Length: 339
Ligand SMILES: *Cc1c(COP(=O)(O)O)cnc(C)c1O
Image 1 (cartoon, protein in one colour):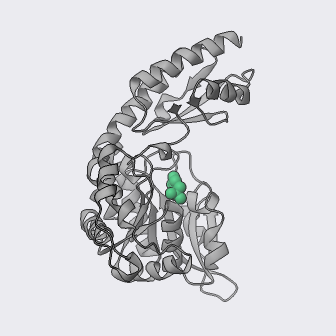
Image 2: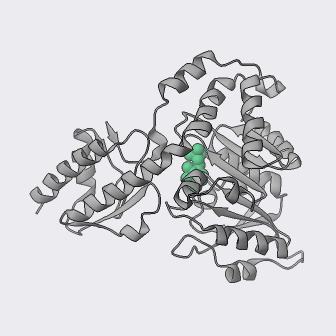
Image 3: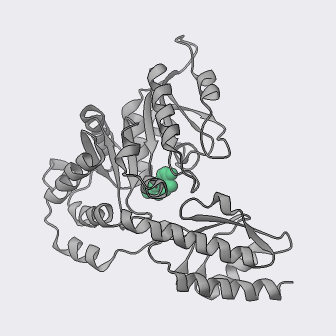
Protein backbone atom coordinates (compact mmCIF):
# COMPACT_ATOMS: atom_id res chain seq x y z
CA UNK A 1 0.00 0.00 0.00
CA UNK A 2 1.26 3.47 -0.89
CA UNK A 3 -0.81 6.01 0.98
CA UNK A 4 -0.54 9.66 -0.07
CA UNK A 5 -3.68 10.78 1.79
CA UNK A 6 -1.99 12.07 4.94
CA UNK A 7 1.01 11.71 7.24
CA UNK A 8 -1.41 10.41 9.87
CA UNK A 9 -1.35 6.99 8.20
CA UNK A 10 2.18 6.02 9.33
CA UNK A 11 2.38 2.76 11.28
CA UNK A 12 4.39 2.47 14.50
CA UNK A 13 7.95 1.26 13.94
CA UNK A 14 9.43 -1.88 15.50
CA UNK A 15 11.20 0.16 18.14
CA UNK A 16 7.91 1.85 19.01
CA UNK A 17 6.16 -1.52 19.24
CA UNK A 18 8.90 -2.80 21.53
CA UNK A 19 8.78 0.29 23.71
CA UNK A 20 5.00 -0.04 23.95
CA UNK A 21 5.23 -3.71 24.92
CA UNK A 22 7.77 -2.96 27.62
CA UNK A 23 6.44 0.37 28.92
CA UNK A 24 6.12 0.79 32.67
CA UNK A 25 2.58 1.93 33.32
CA UNK A 26 0.25 3.16 36.05
CA UNK A 27 -3.05 5.00 36.27
CA UNK A 28 -2.40 8.38 34.66
CA UNK A 29 -5.59 9.92 36.05
CA UNK A 30 -3.96 9.42 39.47
CA UNK A 31 -0.73 10.78 38.01
CA UNK A 32 0.80 7.32 38.48
CA UNK A 33 1.98 6.46 34.98
CA UNK A 34 5.78 6.80 35.00
CA UNK A 35 6.05 6.69 31.20
CA UNK A 36 3.53 9.50 30.75
CA UNK A 37 5.13 11.52 33.55
CA UNK A 38 8.54 11.12 32.03
CA UNK A 39 7.28 12.12 28.56
CA UNK A 40 5.55 15.21 29.92
CA UNK A 41 8.55 16.35 31.95
CA UNK A 42 10.88 15.73 29.04
CA UNK A 43 8.60 17.47 26.51
CA UNK A 44 8.14 20.56 28.70
CA UNK A 45 11.90 20.92 29.16
CA UNK A 46 12.72 20.16 25.53
CA UNK A 47 10.37 22.87 24.24
CA UNK A 48 11.09 25.46 26.93
CA UNK A 49 7.69 25.41 28.66
CA UNK A 50 6.93 25.02 32.37
CA UNK A 51 4.49 22.17 31.83
CA UNK A 52 3.19 19.63 29.33
CA UNK A 53 0.22 17.30 29.00
CA UNK A 54 -0.21 14.20 26.87
CA UNK A 55 -3.56 14.15 25.02
CA UNK A 56 -5.39 11.68 22.86
CA UNK A 57 -5.37 13.86 19.71
CA UNK A 58 -4.49 17.20 18.24
CA UNK A 59 -8.14 18.17 18.22
CA UNK A 60 -8.29 17.51 21.94
CA UNK A 61 -5.04 19.39 22.66
CA UNK A 62 -6.33 22.45 20.78
CA UNK A 63 -9.75 22.29 22.44
CA UNK A 64 -8.21 22.07 25.91
CA UNK A 65 -5.86 24.95 25.15
CA UNK A 66 -8.77 27.12 24.00
CA UNK A 67 -10.83 26.16 27.05
CA UNK A 68 -7.93 26.86 29.39
CA UNK A 69 -7.12 30.24 27.81
CA UNK A 70 -10.71 31.43 27.40
CA UNK A 71 -13.73 31.65 29.66
CA UNK A 72 -17.36 31.37 28.62
CA UNK A 73 -18.16 34.48 26.56
CA UNK A 74 -14.58 35.02 25.44
CA UNK A 75 -13.48 34.83 21.82
CA UNK A 76 -10.33 33.78 20.00
CA UNK A 77 -8.97 35.22 16.78
CA UNK A 78 -7.91 32.64 14.20
CA UNK A 79 -7.72 32.01 10.47
CA UNK A 80 -10.66 31.04 8.27
CA UNK A 81 -8.52 28.07 7.33
CA UNK A 82 -7.47 27.29 10.92
CA UNK A 83 -7.82 23.65 11.83
CA UNK A 84 -9.21 24.65 15.23
CA UNK A 85 -11.89 26.72 13.55
CA UNK A 86 -12.79 24.75 10.44
CA UNK A 87 -11.92 21.13 11.09
CA UNK A 88 -12.59 20.44 14.75
CA UNK A 89 -16.38 20.32 14.76
CA UNK A 90 -16.63 23.80 16.26
CA UNK A 91 -15.48 22.28 19.57
CA UNK A 92 -14.52 25.54 21.26
CA UNK A 93 -18.02 26.93 20.66
CA UNK A 94 -19.84 23.65 21.21
CA UNK A 95 -18.08 22.63 24.41
CA UNK A 96 -16.36 25.79 25.64
CA UNK A 97 -18.91 28.54 24.95
CA UNK A 98 -16.03 30.33 23.24
CA UNK A 99 -16.73 32.34 20.12
CA UNK A 100 -14.30 32.05 17.23
CA UNK A 101 -13.50 35.23 15.28
CA UNK A 102 -12.02 33.97 12.02
CA UNK A 103 -10.02 36.25 9.70
CA UNK A 104 -9.22 35.38 6.08
CA UNK A 105 -5.77 33.83 5.78
CA UNK A 106 -3.35 35.53 3.42
CA UNK A 107 -1.98 33.41 0.58
CA UNK A 108 1.07 32.46 2.63
CA UNK A 109 -1.10 31.26 5.51
CA UNK A 110 -0.42 34.26 7.76
CA UNK A 111 -3.04 36.51 9.33
CA UNK A 112 -2.78 40.25 8.67
CA UNK A 113 -2.23 42.15 11.93
CA UNK A 114 -4.28 45.14 10.73
CA UNK A 115 -7.25 42.88 10.08
CA UNK A 116 -6.71 41.15 13.42
CA UNK A 117 -6.54 44.47 15.25
CA UNK A 118 -9.79 45.58 13.61
CA UNK A 119 -11.50 42.43 14.89
CA UNK A 120 -10.56 42.96 18.54
CA UNK A 121 -13.72 43.94 20.41
CA UNK A 122 -14.00 46.94 22.74
CA UNK A 123 -14.58 46.30 26.44
CA UNK A 124 -18.35 46.63 26.31
CA UNK A 125 -21.11 44.20 27.26
CA UNK A 126 -22.34 44.08 23.64
CA UNK A 127 -19.27 42.10 22.68
CA UNK A 128 -17.51 38.89 23.45
CA UNK A 129 -14.16 39.42 25.20
CA UNK A 130 -11.26 38.97 22.78
CA UNK A 131 -8.64 37.12 24.77
CA UNK A 132 -6.58 34.90 22.48
CA UNK A 133 -4.93 34.71 19.08
CA UNK A 134 -4.51 31.21 17.68
CA UNK A 135 -2.18 30.66 14.73
CA UNK A 136 -1.04 27.53 12.92
CA UNK A 137 2.45 26.48 11.76
CA UNK A 138 2.70 24.78 9.32
CA UNK A 139 -0.61 25.69 7.71
CA UNK A 140 -1.59 23.67 4.64
CA UNK A 141 2.06 22.69 4.33
CA UNK A 142 3.25 26.30 4.42
CA UNK A 143 5.69 27.62 6.97
CA UNK A 144 5.22 30.77 9.04
CA UNK A 145 8.58 32.52 9.32
CA UNK A 146 10.28 33.28 12.62
CA UNK A 147 9.85 36.97 11.82
CA UNK A 148 6.10 36.42 11.59
CA UNK A 149 6.08 34.47 14.86
CA UNK A 150 7.94 37.32 16.58
CA UNK A 151 5.46 39.85 15.18
CA UNK A 152 2.55 37.74 16.43
CA UNK A 153 4.13 37.76 19.90
CA UNK A 154 4.51 41.55 19.76
CA UNK A 155 0.95 42.00 18.51
CA UNK A 156 -0.55 39.87 21.26
CA UNK A 157 1.50 41.61 23.95
CA UNK A 158 0.42 45.04 22.71
CA UNK A 159 -3.20 43.96 22.69
CA UNK A 160 -3.20 42.01 25.92
CA UNK A 161 -4.00 38.70 24.23
CA UNK A 162 -2.58 35.25 24.84
CA UNK A 163 -1.00 33.44 21.89
CA UNK A 164 -1.65 29.79 21.05
CA UNK A 165 0.14 27.90 18.31
CA UNK A 166 -1.56 24.94 16.70
CA UNK A 167 1.70 23.19 16.03
CA UNK A 168 0.31 19.92 14.76
CA UNK A 169 3.13 19.99 12.20
CA UNK A 170 5.42 22.49 13.92
CA UNK A 171 8.39 20.13 13.58
CA UNK A 172 7.94 20.28 9.81
CA UNK A 173 8.23 24.06 10.12
CA UNK A 174 11.39 23.81 12.24
CA UNK A 175 12.89 21.36 9.78
CA UNK A 176 12.07 23.55 6.76
CA UNK A 177 13.52 26.61 8.52
CA UNK A 178 16.51 24.55 9.64
CA UNK A 179 16.21 25.82 13.22
CA UNK A 180 15.76 24.27 16.64
CA UNK A 181 12.12 23.91 17.65
CA UNK A 182 12.64 26.23 20.64
CA UNK A 183 13.16 29.17 18.26
CA UNK A 184 9.48 28.83 17.42
CA UNK A 185 8.27 27.87 20.91
CA UNK A 186 9.80 30.97 22.52
CA UNK A 187 7.17 33.20 20.90
CA UNK A 188 3.99 31.52 22.15
CA UNK A 189 2.11 30.96 25.43
CA UNK A 190 0.94 27.50 24.46
CA UNK A 191 1.51 25.02 21.69
CA UNK A 192 0.06 21.70 20.60
CA UNK A 193 2.12 19.13 18.70
CA UNK A 194 0.71 16.09 16.88
CA UNK A 195 2.86 13.05 17.50
CA UNK A 196 0.80 10.87 15.18
CA UNK A 197 1.49 12.73 11.93
CA UNK A 198 4.95 13.10 10.39
CA UNK A 199 6.55 12.10 13.69
CA UNK A 200 5.05 8.65 13.31
CA UNK A 201 3.55 7.77 16.70
CA UNK A 202 0.33 5.75 16.54
CA UNK A 203 -1.66 8.02 18.87
CA UNK A 204 -1.29 11.25 20.76
CA UNK A 205 -0.53 14.93 20.96
CA UNK A 206 1.27 17.10 23.47
CA UNK A 207 0.01 20.40 24.84
CA UNK A 208 2.64 22.76 26.24
CA UNK A 209 2.18 25.86 28.39
CA UNK A 210 2.51 27.42 31.82
CA UNK A 211 1.80 25.37 34.94
CA UNK A 212 -1.49 27.17 35.51
CA UNK A 213 -2.61 26.69 31.91
CA UNK A 214 -1.81 22.98 31.90
CA UNK A 215 -3.49 22.50 35.28
CA UNK A 216 -6.67 24.02 33.90
CA UNK A 217 -6.37 22.09 30.62
CA UNK A 218 -5.94 18.87 32.58
CA UNK A 219 -9.19 19.52 34.39
CA UNK A 220 -10.97 20.01 31.06
CA UNK A 221 -9.31 16.91 29.66
CA UNK A 222 -11.04 14.87 32.37
CA UNK A 223 -14.33 16.64 31.69
CA UNK A 224 -14.28 15.77 27.98
CA UNK A 225 -13.45 12.14 28.73
CA UNK A 226 -9.80 12.39 27.83
CA UNK A 227 -8.39 11.12 31.12
CA UNK A 228 -6.56 7.95 30.12
CA UNK A 229 -5.45 5.23 32.52
CA UNK A 230 -2.39 3.15 31.52
CA UNK A 231 -1.54 5.69 28.83
CA UNK A 232 2.15 4.87 29.15
CA UNK A 233 1.52 2.22 26.48
CA UNK A 234 1.07 4.97 23.89
CA UNK A 235 3.29 7.55 25.58
CA UNK A 236 6.23 5.17 25.10
CA UNK A 237 5.82 5.38 21.32
CA UNK A 238 5.18 9.12 21.53
CA UNK A 239 8.55 9.65 23.26
CA UNK A 240 10.36 7.85 20.45
CA UNK A 241 8.46 9.95 17.89
CA UNK A 242 9.54 13.18 19.59
CA UNK A 243 13.12 12.15 20.25
CA UNK A 244 14.04 10.38 17.05
CA UNK A 245 11.76 11.42 14.24
CA UNK A 246 12.08 15.20 13.86
CA UNK A 247 15.41 14.52 12.15
CA UNK A 248 13.63 12.38 9.54
CA UNK A 249 11.22 15.09 8.37
CA UNK A 250 13.75 16.58 5.98
CA UNK A 251 13.57 13.32 4.02
CA UNK A 252 9.79 13.74 3.69
CA UNK A 253 10.34 17.30 2.47
CA UNK A 254 12.93 16.13 -0.06
CA UNK A 255 10.50 13.44 -1.20
CA UNK A 256 7.75 16.02 -1.60
CA UNK A 257 10.06 18.05 -3.87
CA UNK A 258 10.91 14.90 -5.81
CA UNK A 259 7.22 14.06 -6.19
CA UNK A 260 6.31 17.61 -7.21
CA UNK A 261 9.01 17.75 -9.88
CA UNK A 262 8.03 14.35 -11.25
CA UNK A 263 4.36 15.36 -11.41
CA UNK A 264 5.36 18.48 -13.33
CA UNK A 265 6.96 16.29 -16.00
CA UNK A 266 3.59 14.69 -16.77
CA UNK A 267 0.94 16.01 -19.14
CA UNK A 268 -2.36 17.17 -17.67
CA UNK A 269 -1.05 17.81 -14.17
CA UNK A 270 0.94 20.64 -12.64
CA UNK A 271 2.36 21.67 -9.29
CA UNK A 272 3.43 25.14 -8.24
CA UNK A 273 6.88 24.22 -6.90
CA UNK A 274 7.20 27.48 -4.99
CA UNK A 275 4.35 26.29 -2.77
CA UNK A 276 5.99 23.01 -1.79
CA UNK A 277 7.61 24.04 1.48
CA UNK A 278 7.28 20.89 3.58
CA UNK A 279 5.66 17.47 3.05
CA UNK A 280 2.57 18.52 1.11
CA UNK A 281 2.12 18.71 -2.63
CA UNK A 282 -0.95 20.22 -4.26
CA UNK A 283 -1.39 18.85 -7.77
CA UNK A 284 -3.76 20.54 -10.21
CA UNK A 285 -5.19 18.25 -12.89
CA UNK A 286 -6.56 19.30 -16.27
CA UNK A 287 -10.31 19.82 -16.20
CA UNK A 288 -11.03 16.83 -18.42
CA UNK A 289 -9.52 14.41 -15.89
CA UNK A 290 -12.12 12.56 -13.82
CA UNK A 291 -10.51 12.77 -10.38
CA UNK A 292 -13.04 10.58 -8.57
CA UNK A 293 -12.48 7.86 -11.16
CA UNK A 294 -8.70 8.26 -10.87
CA UNK A 295 -8.91 7.76 -7.10
CA UNK A 296 -10.94 4.55 -7.56
CA UNK A 297 -8.55 3.26 -10.24
CA UNK A 298 -5.54 3.86 -8.01
CA UNK A 299 -7.17 2.29 -4.98
CA UNK A 300 -7.37 -0.92 -7.02
CA UNK A 301 -3.60 -0.62 -7.50
CA UNK A 302 -3.12 -0.17 -3.73
CA UNK A 303 -2.26 3.51 -4.10
CA UNK A 304 -4.43 5.72 -1.90
CA UNK A 305 -5.19 9.29 -2.95
CA UNK A 306 -7.51 12.02 -1.69
CA UNK A 307 -10.11 13.18 -4.19
CA UNK A 308 -9.88 16.90 -4.98
CA UNK A 309 -8.54 19.29 -7.56
CA UNK A 310 -6.03 20.44 -6.55
CA UNK A 311 -5.27 17.07 -5.02
CA UNK A 312 -3.28 17.09 -1.76
CA UNK A 313 -0.52 14.48 -1.67
CA UNK A 314 1.42 14.03 1.57
CA UNK A 315 4.82 12.41 2.02
CA UNK A 316 5.75 10.65 5.25
CA UNK A 317 7.85 7.93 6.90
CA UNK A 318 6.11 5.12 5.02
CA UNK A 319 6.70 6.58 1.54
CA UNK A 320 10.10 6.42 -0.15
CA UNK A 321 11.44 7.43 -3.56
CA UNK A 322 10.69 4.00 -5.06
CA UNK A 323 7.03 4.41 -4.03
CA UNK A 324 6.96 7.80 -5.72
CA UNK A 325 8.54 6.39 -8.90
CA UNK A 326 5.96 3.61 -8.90
CA UNK A 327 3.12 6.11 -8.48
CA UNK A 328 4.44 8.40 -11.22
CA UNK A 329 4.77 5.51 -13.67
CA UNK A 330 1.18 4.42 -13.01
CA UNK A 331 -0.13 7.98 -13.14
CA UNK A 332 1.66 8.66 -16.39
CA UNK A 333 -0.06 5.59 -17.88
CA UNK A 334 -3.48 6.56 -16.53
CA UNK A 335 -3.25 10.15 -17.78
CA UNK A 336 -2.11 9.02 -21.24
CA UNK A 337 -4.97 6.55 -21.49
CA UNK A 338 -7.38 9.24 -20.37
CA UNK A 339 -6.45 11.52 -23.27
C1 LIG B 1 -4.24 17.13 12.21
C2 LIG B 1 -4.33 18.49 12.76
C3 LIG B 1 -4.95 18.73 13.99
C4 LIG B 1 -5.73 17.68 14.73
O1 LIG B 1 -5.07 16.53 15.01
P1 LIG B 1 -5.85 15.16 15.26
O2 LIG B 1 -4.84 14.38 16.01
O3 LIG B 1 -6.16 14.62 13.91
O4 LIG B 1 -7.06 15.45 16.05
C5 LIG B 1 -4.92 20.01 14.47
N1 LIG B 1 -4.35 21.00 13.79
C6 LIG B 1 -3.74 20.81 12.61
C7 LIG B 1 -3.11 21.96 11.92
C8 LIG B 1 -3.72 19.56 12.06
O5 LIG B 1 -3.13 19.37 10.87
